[in-house]
Image (tube, rainbow, N blue to C red; front, side, top):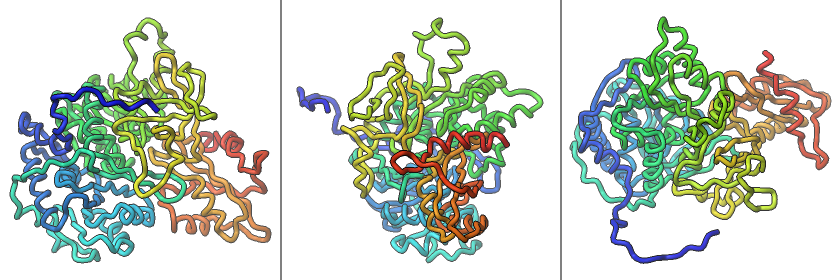
Length: 551
């Protein structure tokens, strides 16, 4: 750890607090007319402005205060990429409360744990997710208010939620101006919980200071400005949509909100890319790949040459990167990060010094790496002996990250083994080249990344082994052409027991979300073990590497 020293006092405005509210408030001063385009629950597109949305943010904040929300309180949001969700991004932290991002992909037990563990007392829920909210209500007694968000009056909606409140009715009687408080910048503005970790999800509480600095970095790194059109593709309920909502407003860009969509409705996103001339968006290869196929089906390929498509979650295939470039001119920019890192910590940009040094194939291969560390973060490689390794392109170590928007602890959790000398340990193994580019080579944590979300193989194994018909179980991630990885489960039956696959899946469904369940459960006579008696996951991963691609 470097020595900490105090130098000469400054005369700068160090008492001026970095608050998320100021990002929007200042944008409205200069760009009140800037557009926000949004898609409603019925699939229709509408256009509003920064100024009109800012008035609704103020009304929303008044409504929250009116139902008892104050500084330090936690307000959950269960919603898609809708306009109301976008408004809550500013309204909740604007009063000093914490916006809890509720990942609707989690199993109900895990999501209920998140609500209770974070201490949420109010939950705002979209009408389309009332069924999920009703399941949560029975498990979350500390939630005192459930606020229903809909274009319809609450009187027309059937729900078993206890004493639900009508979001729009609350807003209708509020003032369009709010006397925004100055919030200590080290206060939490939002919270997100990790997925796929062993045991329960872990809470990361983001500070106002951290997200504002992350926003400034993000906008500078990708040169986002008021000439840009920004499509929020990544779900707003997880990892704060990678910080893009704040970046778009900070840059005074046009914001495009696609509402609710599924991978099967990829045309919604593809058409938005073309119709609204999108220049900045974010997403995973699992979304960008079918979007490319849709664009290929159009009579004329669109010109997206100004588009920077930030691709995360998993490494984008070279065919995807080249495909967008050749068809539309769009740039797929690989980024790396996690819930714990706010999330952007690397960005793949070819350095000017590499021009002329790299051949065409070398250039394209470089685009697959995780990229250069962004300004403001410190990335090291941790060796087996606890020392940091050189950045020579060959030394492989665990990727460790430190910076103003990197978590230093988990909420109400020790988690000391996740940190080393102030650095967060990612669990990913990698190398850093002499040119500064990070490349992930392996995964230290026994987790599976499917469609941008983590699945704990250990938790799946423990659940399978808990079934009376299963003697031993192993779960590994196998490469998948659409979802990057999918779990494959292997079970050794107890003597005298037959494996009922439907029964096993029902057993797992009590704990895991549907998308987390193994696509295949295979019965085997035995499982390979290492010399120290542990499951030999490396051998299993190699054996089943072509399990899905071969099909």
